[in-house]
Image (cartoon, rainbow, N blue to C red; front, side, top):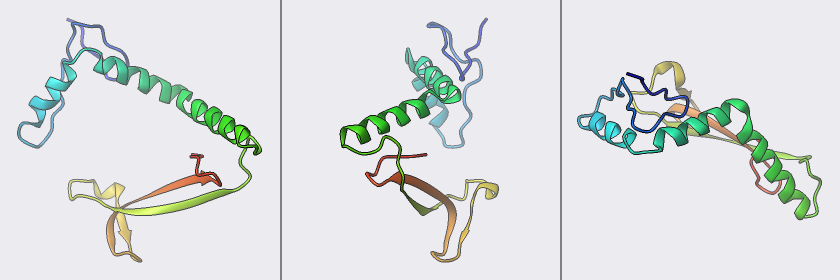
Length: 123
């Protein structure tokens, strides 16, 4: 019996040998139903491989360059805008991955975003 690998594509007709374990009642049943839909793991497999290979970063950079050139700007941005946001984290989130923002009095995570002057994502 072959088991599916969540990091790659799976062959149709095969099911995951180790179902996900979630804490909420009924959640495991729902996840198993979703994973049984044909093609779902295949789509995720392609996505995971593209992320690992840098394909999505390449596509983002090429699209940003094309949009900038079409707008009559330099293909590479020369200015950037950076912003951050504090997001409350649930108690189930590990303490190792969250902290306390003293300015906003929020216990959670901080996320950052960098865009060029046209608002196109840079990182």
